[in-house]
Length: 189
Image (tube, rainbow, N blue to C red; front, side, top):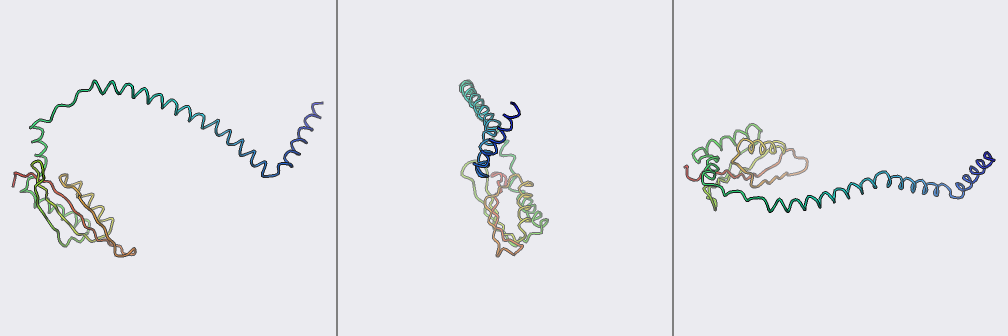
């Protein structure tokens, strides 16, 4: 009787498969695959999300207690402010810094025809802004390496503006306009 039931089951399964056709069987396989994926992956992710949300609520409750117990840091002293301003180069060393910039441009094989320079006092504090506008001609990688090396070698220098132009897409060279700002000590000229 068992053998007969097994043959009947196979026959019934074959008739069912013929009735569904290939598209019906494909749909059933996809549905079963989605259910298995949901059980295997999505259910675990739901559990992790629930645990993370619980942890977030717990952290928020504890952080409000920490915020109330923290003491504000003390105001910076005059000595610390003076030490901060001493880290900037003196105005008398300006030629050395400009030569350093030119040396990096030469090292990167960039064409540096001219530069525009402008000195101005910052609105607050004891620093002077020395604005340096440099038009460069060279390959893009050379310009990028030039900017990176200059900023690495001169910590008091900031890149304020960068414009890059290429005549056409086949040209290997670019024309770049770099605006650097060198911060100097205001009282040491």
